[in-house]
Length: 100
Image (tube, rainbow, N blue to C red; front, side, top):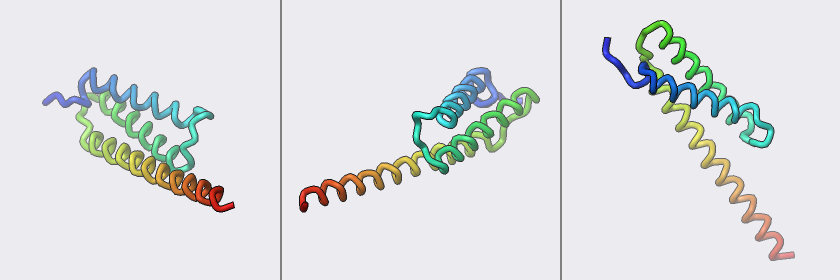
């Protein structure tokens, strides 16, 4: 059986770290991710748990890496959109204060 990164002990440590950080982002009250952000973090945790379950069965996780890449890309796109909206709000409030 070929050894893949996600099926190695270092890969499992990475999955545990990703799942832990995602759980912190879900349950921390000071992080304001919104509904979509929390759903994406929940999907990340479930994907990591599925990868850990595959490791205990000694099988190779087939689409685990692709799923994690898609989820992290979706989180990045959501973050860029959120920052863009906040920037537009900030510009509108500054513009409105100048014309008062």
